[in-house]
Structures are given as structure tokens and as C-alpha cells.
Image (tube, rainbow, N blue to C red; front, side, top):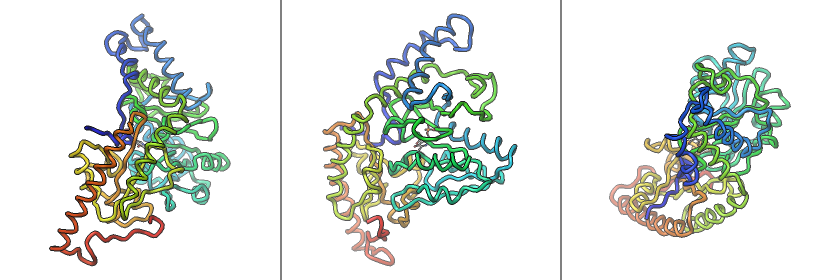
Length: 406
Ligand SMILES: Cc1ncc(COP(=O)(O)O)c(C=O)c1O
């Protein structure tokens, strides 16, 4: 049996999405900017897809949604263009973000620091979220932008975006949120929360990889990242990727219709799985369930190294993760767990399990059984190893768990 439990890394493309995309590869393949019929034939599908994405996040007609190649591009675009618009060509010099953003935000902030921008990386609380008062206390009259994710990719923790948006609005500071792990998982309504910019990615909600979008409130000006043939009204040059835009539209519609019902169904499976795994000794999960996206568990098993667990689960056809997809090739500690206060040893035990609306009860049962077996096996190995080679400075398998994580 093969069980995919890594849906925060990417998702299966929904069959209906594939079906919607197929005609636009070799039947209706014109360039939407061409004036002939091959080009104009693509336009109804394009505008339908755009409507679907607007509806999915409740954007208004005054707002703009610009398709990009991925959320990494959307995040780069906002950060680099705010630097150009408000720092190089303005009187600001400061950006506020958090310690637990996706690398596409953190690396871009590091790049901007090298260019002389002051960046504040806000600490998170014991649940892994940044609190609104923390954001408020770091905003100065030199702050150009606050960038705080809507939901975290590793813990699933949902950030207080509404409150943070209000603070930014009252201080006259631009607010960007990386909405990648929120859109399609929880209700996202850009008219209910104040966000100037929001990044999205289709492959996180059963759309294709290689297509994302940037929501821009009130169609406000933002220097383009890609210049060229003035596509998308000059916002982002590059021939429009019609099949993928059609796929993103369909996927956004499917993920967000009756979202409360979908959330309830996923949450029930997630909670059943989490309850079963928590019966194992010395095990804990990060963040309260009700504050998390309904599909995510970040679990830590004392004395069991995360990568070892992944390989063991992989032998049984179970795909999970130890951190963000980009980091999983490197044997690095889970950075979000470190930010929460776990020591390195503990942060090496984190395993992220992320379900989808396609996850079945049978798959949950399969994971419960094999997970428990894997833990027993790895614990047995590490205790026999400890008998011959004690861990320096303490008992084998012993690691410091900060009080607030236990
Ligand atoms: C929170 C978050 N932001 C951004 C990204 C990057 O998205 P993309 O793969 O579309 O570049 C990811 C993907 O893992 C993510 O989880």
C-alpha cells in the first residue's frame, strides 16, 4: 500500500483539474495576447479561471490577482518590489517578518539585508505563532512592510492575520501574507482581513505545480519583478501559462466550495490519527489542534530521530516529512521547532504528517499501525546501541524537552 501523508509539501492534482487543463495543451493552445482566433479562443477559459480564483478568496473587482510561476516568485516579488518602491525610492529602511517564514521569504530577506535593509525576524511564542502585540512593538516610522504567513507549513499553526492586518493598517504600513498553506485549507476572505498582498500556490490545493498568484489589494502599484512583453497589464511579463491557470482556477474552486464540510472531514481523520499516535510514550505534538490547519500534525517522539522514522515509514510506502520539502534532503533540525525553543536533539525528532481531502480512513489505520511499529523498532535499536555506546553526557535517547512543549 502507498500512503501519501505529505500534502503540505505538494498535493495530487485532482482528476477534474487535469481534465479541465488537457484541452489547453494541444487543442486550444493559442497565445492569449494574439489577435487571431487561436489566441482569442483561450480567453473565455482564462477569464473563467480568474473569476474562480477571485471567488475562492473573495477578492473584489477593485483588487488584482496576478498569476506567477509559484509562490516563491510571489514572495520574492513583494519583498523585492517594496524594497525598490519604498526603500530605494522612498524614505523607509525596515521590513518586519518572522523567524518561521518559508525559505522563499527568509532567503529574500537575507538578500535584502545584504543590500542594507534592516530586517526584524520576530520570535514566535510556545505554540509557534507570532503575537499581534509583538508585531506592533517592532513597527517604526521607517517600516515599509510587514510579512507574516497566514499558516505555517510545518506546524499548520494559523497566525492572527486579522489582528496583524489591523495593526498594519492603523500604522500605515504595507502588509503581506504568505497564504500558501491557508488557501484551500481554511476559509480565506481578503475582504474580512486587511492584507495588501497575499501569495498563493496551486500545487498546495490539488492544482498543478509551477503556477501561483499574487493578490494585490485595490490593484495598488507594485514595481514588476519580470519585465518584458507587458503581459497581465504590465504587472508580470511572460506568456500566460493558460493550461496551468485553468488548472489553478478549477483547483481553487474545488478546494474552497463547502470548505467547512471538507475541513470537518479532514479534521476528524487528523484527530483520530493524532490521538492514536499520542498513546505512544514520550510523544507530543506542536500547537493546539484548534489553532492549526485541519490537516497537519507535527509530532515529536522522544529518542526517535525523525529521518530514521521517515526511512522506516518509507519502506512501508508511507510518505511523510521532517520539515519543509526544501529542507528534507539535508539532515537539518526542524527550524520551526528550534524557533519554538526545542533544543537541537529534540528538533531532530519532528515528523510532519499532512493529510488531504483524499486521505481515507483505511490509510489512517495503515499509518497508525506502521508508525507504532516503526517507533518500537527504532527505540529497540537505539536502546541496544546505547548498551554498547552510551550517549555522552546522559542516558541514551534522553533529550531536553522545554517545559512548554511537554
Ligand atoms: C508557506 C509556504 N510558502 C511558500 C512556499 C513556496 O511555494 P512554491 O512551491 O509555489 O514556490 C511553500 C511551499 O512549500 C510554503 O509552504
